[in-house]
Image (tube, rainbow, N blue to C red):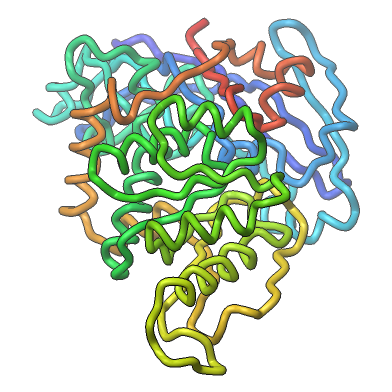
Length: 378
């Protein structure tokens, strides 16, 4: 009889009392079904999209640590004003971690599952902050020989998001695009895609150091939003590139509206059409896909009438384009995982180390150049 496996899994719980509790719980791993595999998780990144589930709306400045070295527990308070937004998850212990990579240690009886036994695979589907994860064989991406788990751990969320942006641009009839928080791991990846594919990209950053980082890796158009010349510089870059679609990771504040204003100004600067009090007839689109600034989004409507601001998420986009086209994007990621889609990490931690106040203080800042990787097998 095959020996049962028990492994630790990171869980996030927000109680009706307004308390967040993050802890490690032992979980029994059942034998895989015919089309399933059991993966020993050896690398899983902490992405901004993971932090929203990990900590919810908790005020992490109130975080305290308890438990033991082997079983740490982090608690924090959720502000009363934020509890309504957390209603759907109250008193429900939730697993965390969008993606990861590891080694298949058990496989079901199907040919597809057996073919993965002993192989290194990448996965997406939640609950990756765990020592073991049961997956459908069809949901695993076998990594090429020579690809490490660290290289494969981030081959879904950021790469497919970046490719999704350029695909959305093409499908909606735009020829160039704008990206905010552009010095991020995702932003650097998008820059490499655009350079490789011949797409003009306007990068918006928040410091001269970030601007230099992007220019040093070949970015052509970089604009610093803290510069007194920001709007002039942005308008000039948009006039040169013709970018009329933007993907905004900031979300709150005035930036989305400023981008639309600069787009309209750039169109007016380069257009020979007659004046219209309704503005240009060129569609200007900003998609908000992140919330680094949690304030309300402010829009000052001084850019005509042909515009839109909406939300953009990776998984609905992949569903929209269908399995065949999504498969082509995944195949490109696998082929270029060491180049175009390479991710870089500043620190690798164990599950227990990820629940230290010192580590949380760093990775929860979501700062450029501070990307953490969890190795649950440590």
